[in-house]
Length: 167
Image (cartoon, one colour):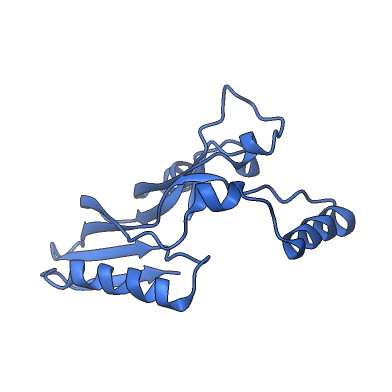
């Protein structure tokens, strides 16, 4: 998972900087446009703010093809995060602010979870397929199972050796 143009990462394009520093290739897939810093009325640099959050794959070898599979929605980020917070969430935020001087920003977002798939050509000229996914963490296991089943159903005809990673 990486950000592009977010205050929590100093508005940097993290994956681009990392890949550039290593001399590697990369692909990025936006999952969400983050609206939390705006909704929380944080002091943001409007000239630098892009609010992009997503999945990335960095490869030493050439990326020949990249594609995205949008996963089924199992949590409504925008609507759910704008609702009144529970007492437990209030305690968590107050504790973070009091004990650690950290402000927890609501993750008000537009978008949804995905899987980023790239075909990478190895020095042997063999192509392998790499999948990076970020299953929903704000749902019951049944929701993640639904997303994983959908992903596997969409990957079952891949012809290349396949590596599936993520959380």
